[in-house]
Every structure is written in C-alpha cells, then in structure tokens.
Image (cartoon, rainbow, N blue to C red; front, side):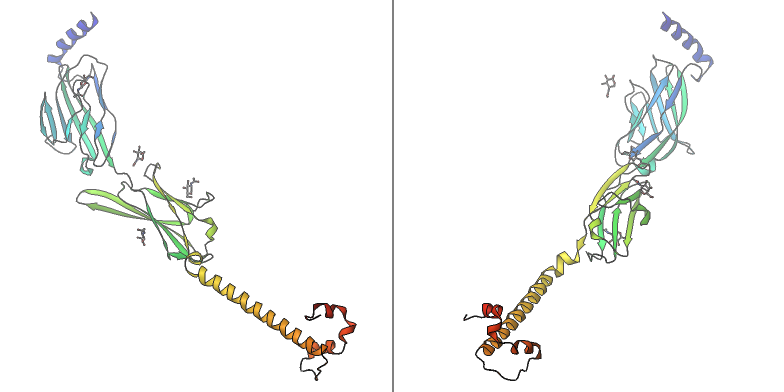
Length: 302
Ligand SMILES: *[C@@H]1O[C@H](CO)[C@@H](O)[C@H](O)[C@H]1NC(C)=O
Ligand SMILES: *[C@@H]1O[C@H](CO)[C@@H](O)[C@H](O)[C@H]1NC(C)=O
Ligand SMILES: *[C@@H]1O[C@H](CO)[C@@H](O)[C@H](O)[C@H]1NC(C)=O
Ligand SMILES: *[C@@H]1O[C@H](CO)[C@@H](O)[C@H](O)[C@H]1NC(C)=O
C-alpha cells in the first residue's frame, strides 16, 4: 500500500523535479585502491528501496567528457570500469587499478526515480615488497664499525622503516631513512633505504630486525639481519692455530727446562761438579742431595 503511494508520489514528482535529491540520496565511500588489483568503489542509494538504475556516468573533476558510461548494459569509455552489479546498486569496479585513477570524480546516476550527482575520491597505494638487508663491511668485527641497511621497494606512498635488536630495543632513532620517489611510465613508488650506523657494535645485539610500515603505519613487511662476524668467518682458524702453537712452544720449553734441571741434578748427584754457570741453581749445588729427601724422590733412577 505505502510503496504504491511512494511510487505515485515519485511519478508525480519526476516531471516537476528532475533531480531525486528530495526523495533519496546517493552516497559513495572514499576509496583506496591497490595498484594492479581490482578496486570496488562502494556507493549506495539512501532512503529508497525500489529503484532501478537506467544509466551511470563517471567524469574526472575538471574534464568535460565522462571517462566511463554505462547505459543499461551498454558500456563505453575506459573498459576497466564497470558497474559492480547494477541490480545491487550503483557501486563501481575498476578491474586493474592504475595510479592515474587517483583523483576526484563526479558520479552521475540516472534512475527510474530521477538522477543524482555525487563527488567521490580514489587514491591508489602499492604494498612494499619484503625488505632486503645488507651490512657494510660484509664481515664485522666485534667492537668495530658497521652500517646496517634495510631497503624496501615498490611501495606507494612513502612508508618508513623501524629497527630493533635481539632484545627488542628500538634503534630507529639512530637510523637515517632515505626516500627515493620513482615514476616509471606512470607506475609510482617510493624506494626506502634505512641506514643504522654503529661506531662500535656489540655483536651480541644481533640479529637485528627491520620492519617496513606503510604510510598509515601498518606493517608491510620485515626482515632479520644476521651479522657475519669477521672473527668467526676468517681468522678463527688461524687464531686457534696460534694458540695451539703457543701452548706447544711453552710446553716444549717447560719440558726442556725440566730436562735440563734433571740433568743438572743428576750431575750433582754423581758429584761431577763444576763451578756453576747457572747462578740460579747455586743454592742447590751448595746442599747435598742426601740432605734433601724431596730431591731424591723426584730424581729418576732413585
Ligand atoms: C547481482 O546480484 C544479484 C542479487 O544478489 C545476484 O543474483 C546476481 O547473480 C548478481 N550478478 C552478478 C553478475 O554478480
Ligand atoms: C640498500 O641501499 C643502500 C643505499 O642505496 C646501498 O648502499 C645498499 O647496498 C643497499 N642494500 C641492498 C641489500 O640492496
Ligand atoms: C621506535 O622508535 C621510533 C622513533 O623514535 C618510534 O616512532 C616508534 O614508535 C618506536 N616503536 C616502538 C615499537 O616503540
Ligand atoms: C596500509 O596497510 C593496510 C593493511 O594492509 C591497508 O589497509 C592500508 O590501506 C594501507 N595504507 C596505505 C596508505 O598503504
């Protein structure tokens, strides 16, 4: 009953008022599309249920001709655009979003209940690829200088990079972020390179984690940076060799000294005495071996 009434009112209104403004409204949500993916521009009719779309026209603000039009099922203009599902409402879809789609549009929708215009905006983003990391120098000395790099590409608009060490300490304050905007035949991106420099690094703080955030501070990707220690990779082998060699030299010296000592004592024992050329052992030569039971114990041949 009431719908019949509304229909009656509507049909009375249409000849008088061309726009449907007083009866219903057309609304569109701000749209964020992702580069190279499908984007839906959500639009809906407000305050009306029984409504049928006759035609739609989408014009970029500042241009005269619509870039896309659909009259019943006949589409014209940019073929990437279409009505998502005309029986469900005036929502639009872009099949493969491009950066040139960014901007303000005027959307004109003609229905069996009059027409409406609405302004809508589209922005286009691109997700950052997982970052790549590197260190300079490649092999790092504990306590030595090093620069850690974390680079992320293909994202848009510009994001940021944060740094954390193994214990979760935030090193972002000490890093320098470089943003390099690119536009390669209409494909926009801002390459990010973050550099975290230590004059003297404590290798126990590794591994480091760098996290890439998009421009609305949502995490896009992360990577873990292992540090290749110069000590573990290059010189650890020769170091061990040096230590072993050192031990062997000291060992043989000790053995030699002991042997010399024993020979000397043996000579003492056999009373083959000479005026000593070894002042250090003089006190021994002054004592008889028999007075010293300890000496007798350690001498071989006793
Ligand atoms: C459009 O929506 C109607 C109602 O939900 C559904 O039956 C129809 O299959 C949809 N058409 C397309 C092309 O998705
Ligand atoms: C990251 O960028 C810096 C500066 O452009 C460069 O020196 C470094 O080699 C890059 N690292 C990687 C892994 O691409
Ligand atoms: C790390 O430090 C940066 C720069 O000071 C700050 O913006 C960020 O919120 C910090 N992150 C965390 C998790 O504390
Ligand atoms: C940031 O990432 C979130 C989650 O992926 C996404 O919803 C948002 O649109 C992105 N914003 C920008 C500006 O890239």
